[in-house]
Image 1 (tube, rainbow, N blue to C red):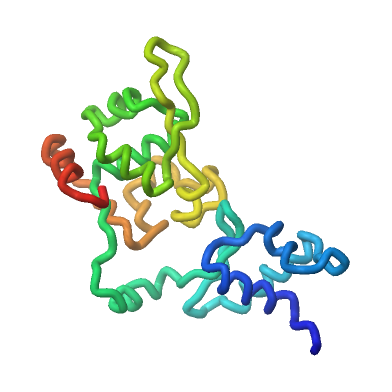
Image 2 (tube, rainbow, N blue to C red; image 1 turned 90 degrees about the horizontal axis):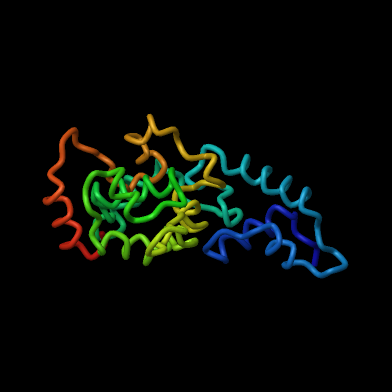
Length: 205
């Protein structure tokens, strides 16, 4: 049986994996005697990326590796496949996540200072349960408060390869472009008590 083109092997692997594959994982698909070098793998992936151009799927590189995913302009149609509505995250949770992403490492007290309101335990637990935020150390001050930072899962979720790809602070109101399911309509004014109450009443944050 003839060996299929490299890009076809990688395409099948990404579809079968259901998650991002690193170049190391792709190399492990092959026997030691026929293991392609990373530049060759990357070249094949770029070819595949071109093959998928103007289609309903994209080949993208994120922090964890490469994956095949639904093109963003297909989301409005695919959303009708499921009865459940996409998860809508509250303003309080998204602002907290933004502070952590842009100011990490940052303590809970520092987040509250930036936002001007206290943070509910539900918000921090939700961010950690989703794997977007983790404790990365402790501030060397009395009480040694935990310092939070974002994770590779956070980058993967927002289709980012690194934090350098985050939009500028001036573009935060358009952050929903990174993920169509996120509701980032920040109102000009907010009732802190109301938004924290909403978080406590939502199992998804």
